Length: 449
Image (cartoon, rainbow, N blue to C red; front, side, top):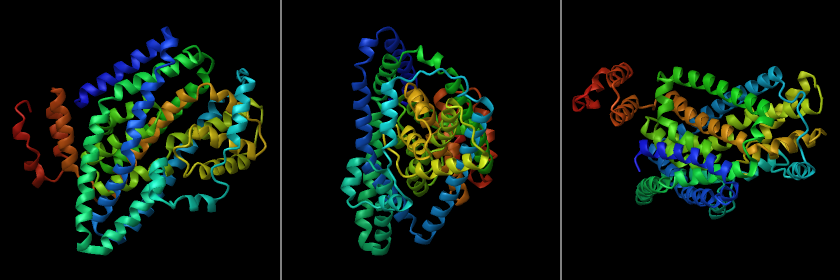
């Protein structure tokens, strides 16, 4: 299924899912099967894809010393991006005060669920989090979809290939072929995305109803405003650093972003996003390292949501804390949110555990349970876009961003839509790459330009 058509079909599936869930809730409630089948198909791709891409990316790079520098730069960027998300979430929460005067919509069942979430403490300490980085079995890590453990094993495997030298070349060639096969596999699975989107949206609307959006309008509006504000800031900074157009970047990732939004699952968009960023000009080794690592350490949307949701919960209980106490709580949220990607309703689990740990009411968590899927759609999309932006910035930082490849990617997009503005793209792309490489872009092949 071609990219343009797939995007259209996903959007149509989104609209149909809303309609079916709203008008025919009995049918919509049964559509979660379609979403689950699609997500299972995506999950069966991720482990072999990550393993092959990370290993080939690092091993083919050949320079082991550069891996340490890449890791340090990546962690620095992640810390800066998540800190910005935290500040924006706090600021919006303080200005909009979404929890003040909020009606008590939580049932006893919701409160009980929130209490159970508070008990799901994935990391009792920093030491436990550190131990969890290293898998006892790569098969076990793959079966449970632990992305970070797969990445750690893949890094060590790649280093061993580099150390083995020429003798390991057959293994490297085999894994290179495997990565190409898995990307083709991804393209096949993506043909089923519209069905998965339809099932996910129809089920969500059937279970929650559209009316719930009105009751929660203030917190939903505050969160999405904060998410858009963060994207505006981070994308402008990232694209200015790299020297590319924000619109060009957004065009590139529109499809995986739409998929992440409609399914509220970052895993669904990961394989496609990795391939797109590589085609967009980011080097393969950086895509293979930064993207999966970012899914654990660079959850910008989730971090922003946690900051806003924490203030929402305190405001509902009419609790007013001094700035120092708020800073301590936010620092705790940032630390406890690392390394537990993949846990169902992970943001609410972290929020409940933190509130309980500081002795505060879980009423806010119970109230947010009713709209968690709608909130998750936004924060998951921002998580994805934030990690795509990270690959671009770090690739530029490493002097490995390929502007010629990006220009060809944009020209292919312009040709597909037969845009009348293609000459503008042409001039824009020419200004971003070395003059001696202009002849490699194939402008002569374009009769319209």
